[in-house]
Length: 279
Ligand SMILES: NC(=O)c1ccc[n+]([C@@H]2O[C@H](COP(=O)([O-])OP(=O)(O)OC[C@H]3O[C@@H](n4cnc5c(N)ncnc54)[C@H](OP(=O)(O)O)[C@@H]3O)[C@@H](O)[C@H]2O)c1
Image (cartoon, rainbow, N blue to C red; front, top):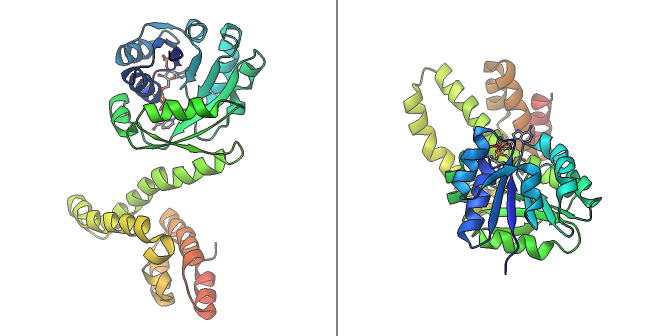
């Protein structure tokens, strides 16, 4: 017999997790929220009745809090008095540890966190992308087997992360996902400034970006690295810096320093490039 689950905050992530667990046979008994249109939409997507956050917390042994990061602690305080003894409460924020839920511990519940390393633009897309995704988990003593079971039942891969490591792990994930998007936006802007139409830029950069990512994943960053910094071509780097302004110059120089950190170069080339790329 599986434990009853409730979801509090059935937005993009909460609705996807609720629907995924229900599909995997878990009794998802309630979708809690602030009684907004989003609560009703989330409940419909999950296929469970909408309720207040407190009522949803009281109805389940596993309470998934999938509200915005800044609202996790307040939600924990709100639901704590309603919790069942021995309940496990988990949140889905990447940069917070289970300590963000500490008010629930004072009520005899256990706290945990479960962060899918995946992007959820909508509940439907998130649900589909969960299959095969890696989900990073940590929590109070005895919660690990349950967290792994939940993740595996979603068709995903559980990975343990330490409480202290979470914020760094999440900063790394932001660089790999959101910062990559911002970096590509800057690359498109430079193509546009060079007079290359957007459609052409998208078509031309597609094969370069895909191949680069594939190379990094197959060979590791150091062996996948090519370009002027990797070759020690200081004059080319100086030409780029002279042509760039403002934010684009700052981004180029900062990422040039990160490139230098993994480039295999003789000390003289390294020094020349470090001087050019200094903040
Ligand atoms: N989206 C992603 O790609 C992604 C990926 C991994 C992890 N996460 C994490 O998952 C959590 C939820 O993110 P999300 O993208 O699913 O957010 P979301 O789509 O904005 O949904 C959050 C839900 O929380 C409720 N809510 C909003 N503001 C609130 C407040 N001030 N107090 C209490 N409840 C509030 C709302 O439901 P009601 O109106 O029904 O109350 C809303 O539907 C965050 O911690 C985020 O870091 C997100």
